[in-house]
Amino acid sequence: MRRTLLLFVVAFVLAVVGAPSCQVYEAPPEPSLPESVSNLLPDPTAPLVVRFSKPIDEKTLHLKVARNLVDPRGRLADEWDPPRDLSLIFSHGYDEGDTGGDGVLSADKTTFTITPTAAFPINPELVLIVEPGLHAIDSDVTINARRKLRFGYQFDLTCNAPTKIMPAKGSYFVLIDVKQPIGTQVRLWADFRVDTSTGRFSAEFIRAGRNLDGSRCPGGCASTDACRTLPGPPACVVPSLRADDTNEFPDFIADDKTAASFRFTASGCIVDSPDGSAQFVNLPVDIFVSSPQVTLRNTRLTSSFARDAQGVLRGAGSLSADDVSLGPSSSGKGAGTLTAILVADSQAPTNIPAPPPIAP
Image (cartoon, rainbow, N blue to C red; front, side):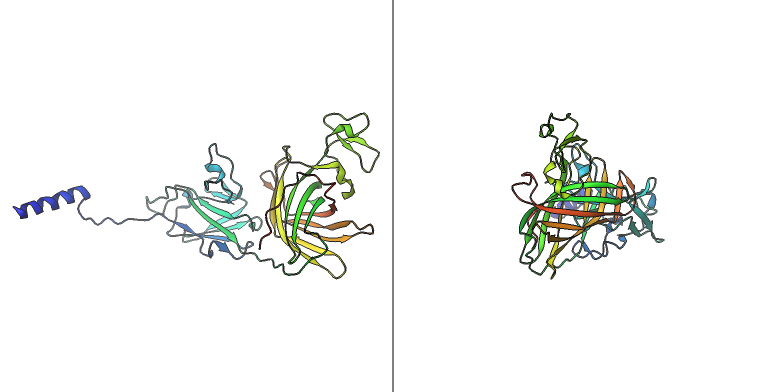
């Protein structure tokens, strides 16, 4: 009786879970970044190498590299409800081709190498996205869920010398005259915070727009015009009119409301020179302008600051960018000149955003 009961139990278990078989689980072709160490890569100018755990069918590969900009739930912009566009740097699809660079699959179908149009940005963090539907060669094994691999780049900028020329906190009016790829002027307000013991700084830049208060001009101005008071006499002008120099800062406000508004954060080092000037350089940063739609990749601002004969702290230097995109199209490298002036707190706009804390 006991033996019969035991045989019954065994038969029942086999019927429920299935008899042993020869079937073996076959994993899909998983992506990896073989050169990444703790999610960091050594060289943003080098091609990005993506390795797959088994040969893939290139026709099913849809891959993107984007800035890892997520909401509090860790979702990328195209995963929101409603979805928004990703901050894309590179994309590849068999039918769509490549944007933002060139991607090549190796002969053995296991390595995909991306050579970007411009060096990948150092910050913010990036993410490699492999979309569902990726097949292994001669197999039905498929990635059924999006794969996201976060990564960034190791970049050291040593700031280890005290600075006395630029104050620990200051508001600056900045003019950038872009020469390449197209001629235009960018006007900015900036809040600089400086660790004077090391020279490390953190700065927040925001678009500077002409003051549209027409009552500042005698008789007033049309609603579509701005009042230009400097260099004088006061006159009504189109808001896009270029500034002749940084002394015109009283005619500009920090634009945090219009469709043309944009802002960006920069950090880096300030180094005092024996001649009484201070040199500053920032870690490369991407700048996004929404109207018109312009993206500057890996932008570097460099300047030398010194007091003029009247004791006013002024800066002069340059802008460079690895790539400038007008809308979706790359227009090549960017270059321009930079001038800046330190503005007293009593004369600076009160709505210039504060920068993040200075990194240790």
